[in-house]
Image (cartoon, rainbow, N blue to C red):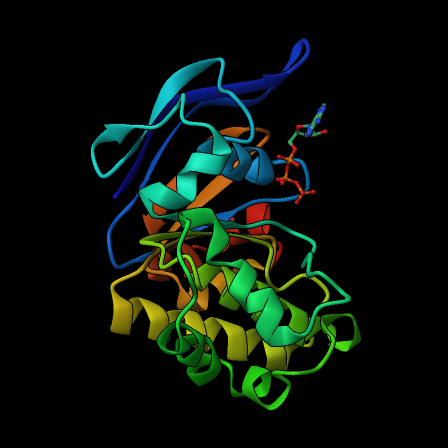
Length: 234
Ligand code: ATP
C-alpha cells in the first residue's frame, strides 16, 4: 500500500532522516517507534506532502506521491492525524466530524457519521457538545473520527497516546484494530509508547537518529530484550 524507499529528509544543513526504507502493507498496522528526535514526525509529514524529501521515493498503491501537495492527499485516500488533537473548539462534535469530508470534496453522510459513532460511542453521546469542552481522550477520538470521514484507505497517526490514561489508550488502540479488521484500512502509527503500539501493530519499525535500526513483526520486536532496552524504553 505505502512504500518508502531510501528517503532522506533534512532541515537546513541537518538531515533528520537518512535513507529510510519501509513499507506499510494493506490491512495492517505498522508502528514507527523511536525516542524523541528519531524522525518519526518528519517521516509522517513527508509522506503526507507537508515536507519535501531531499532524495528517495514514496509510493501509494504503486503511484509516486513525492510531489503531490498535501491538500491533494485526501483524494488519493490518505488521511493524516497530526500530533496535538487540533479540533475547532467553538464547533460541536458533529460539526467537527463533518469538516473531515471537505478534503475529499464530498458531503459527510449519516452513514459516515455512524461509522465514527459506532467506533466511539462517547462521541455519539456528545454529538452536540462543543469540542473545546471534550477531554483529551475524547478529542483524540474526535480527530481520528474526523479523519475517517474522508473515507481513507491509509491513515497516518502521530502519537495518539500522548498524555492519555492507559485505559483510554487501550480503547483507542482496540478501535484501530477493529477498523483494520472490518474496513481493511492500512495504518501507519507513529508512537513513543512502544509497548502499547506493539501490542496492536502487525509490524514495527524502529528509528534511531533518523535511521531504521529494526523492521520486524511486532511480536518479534516486543520479545527482543536487547532492542527494547536500547531503543524502546521498556
Ligand atoms: P518527537 O517524538 O519528539 O516528536 P520525532 O521522532 O517525531 O520526535 P522529529 O520531530 O521528526 O522527531 O525530529 C527529527 C529531528 O529533526 C530532530 O532533531 C528535530 O530537532 C529536527 N527537526 C524537526 N523539525 C524541524 C524543523 N522545522 N527545523 C529544524 N529541525 C527540525
